[in-house]
Picture 1 (cartoon, helix red, strand yellow):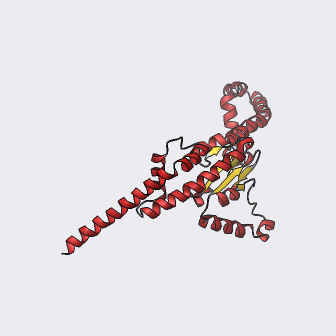
Picture 2 (cartoon, rainbow, N blue to C red):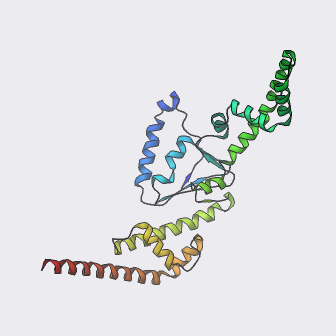
Picture 3 (cartoon, helix red, strand yellow):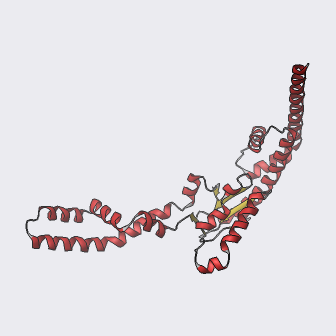
Length: 259
């Protein structure tokens, strides 16, 4: 279980001297080869940014790793202020101001039809003054918009986390999730050993077909694995028998070709 609240790697001399990149790579290597479930959780008001996200990204070991977040946490490569600095530069802000602000649109029109140099200079000064007044407002609006991209709803939509888990119920959630994953992984291992042609994903799909409850409810699935243990064991035995029969038939067909 990893509680992730890191704002990334600065790339400065202090981090380089501390061999942060080296140790981060070692964490990635260890997670890539880990054989048991790993849960990453972003706590309330926690942030996972930049190189820190890369170190614990579930794509490192998708069969074993999964990420969850509290609704008040944030996650993304750049912070909102950094996104606006890159994606919404001052020229872009000014262009939006002139498109949306009624006073600026009126000043632009007056400037376009002005016949006097003095009037043009005065109008340009008013435009500049209005732009300076609006800059903080537009920057704040852009930062708030960028912050929406880092919230749990957007992270779920992008598929980078599995679910939003409020801190108040996180203990219960991860308790049943851990029990479910340990039991599920053991059953998947038995199914793959029974039929070598099965992948982990196909084995999970077969378990889903056997499940008589909501597959997304961890507690219900744990109860199903416990109460339906005999039924599941019988299905695995049938699976093994079918695999052996298929092997025998394949060998018989190959033998006939040789004769």
